Image (cartoon, rainbow, N blue to C red; front, side, top):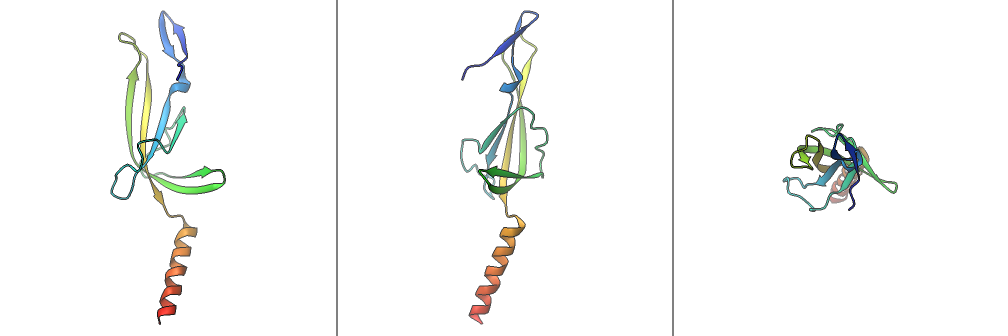
Length: 116
């Protein structure tokens, strides 16, 4: 991946779009489902705080997730430079939305009625 820089007082500073917030999906036990990010947002991801819920919309298919943990890392791109970039790694877990919960409850009730 090619990085773009601008010069400021003799220092090469990476442009802001290289900043990223990476979202990784974990299971109920906290184990990573995949080593690849579920999604990566370029730019500000400060809204991603522990406990926050959000929908991920993939081509009209919306899935509800909850932020479990946020880890921050600042990368310095020059040995003697002062400028760095913030990198957020966000662990998220899938949450059942109300439609899914309602469907599961209705199915469980239907099965109970059939048994009786």
